[in-house]
Length: 453
Image 1 (cartoon, rainbow, N blue to C red):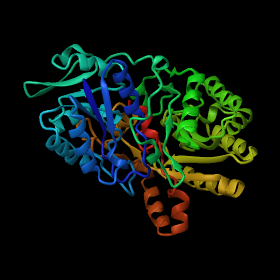
Image 2 (image 1 turned 30 degrees about the vertical axis):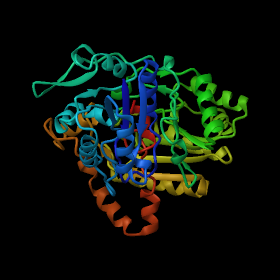
Image 3 (image 1 turned 90 degrees about the vertical axis):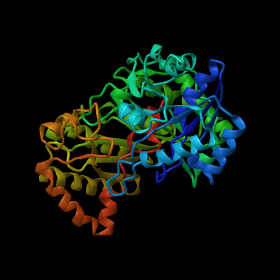
Image 4 (image 1 turned 180 degrees about the vertical axis):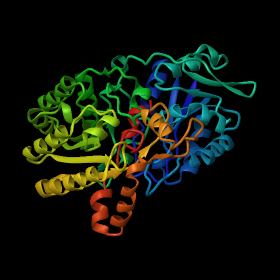
């Protein structure tokens, strides 16, 4: 069977994001004997013309669309990506009428039933991770009810089979990347190439969809295979930067250390960055990661008081956050980026000003090594504790449409929004506290790939 994968059009995203999620699923489909091609309109000069040529030439039996993100989750420049999905579907149906269509990806899975009802053109929807589900669906296109993890249509209604176990990530083959023109994803020195070392998250952050999307059990790949993939990215395509798209790189710590040591052993001279947890670091580990090529250590503590951290379900303390800054300062050359929420549960005016004071101290101590310091909103999403908190505070209810972005605002701290709006009028201060966007998996283009498979 011939399968044609298409990345959803996401105009307005900051970077060109390599579709590692599609690569994992396409690799799995190919392993089952199917012929696969893929297309990303986000790197094409004339996407419509290119898509028409590719579809007519390949003449696929099935077309799959990967929806990575629903929106940009940025209140100052909010882009609702579903608005681009409608014209993209219309174009596909015009070029390839009568072809069956399937949709998947992390953005789809979070709002699966809603999207299936919004876009009746999709015959099937693949729920959560697809490396096992999708090849099984290909064998049962006329009987999708036999496949776990599938949304399908019958009699004009949308049905869901049942949830299935997550695949053994460690046993999956490394994703083939040459489905896409890899060279187009390095623009002006900015790399958007991602490597995934593990799936699943043992943390319980109130706002995060990672546990829903990838489970609460960590499924790691062998560290040697991870570094094999990194070496291929460098040797074959000459990328000099990449990102670990794991939700948190240093949990478990031993796995992260093994990867770093293997990179050093091979003498790989490639720069990378990742998100780290503040509690699971030491000066020795940061030096190890830095010597292995990590130039940007990103942290997302989100709150800066014990009350707020507890409300957010964080396992770190204020002292852990301060310690992360101290350690990074000791490792000459290491750079740090950090982000907090604007008005998380339990935040007060004193905590808000403590965050600003932290910025001033960090800037004075680190200078240009402080690559970002952000205050960002909380997007309310299904399957999260922040939704329950918002409902309890009457900020929304069970019937609130969350497909269109709804942001959490802690009512007692609403005055902070007034303070921020005043600061934004001053350009330098605005850049100081607003310039570093919160790049978490469903929020930033490059980070989102770890949950789009």
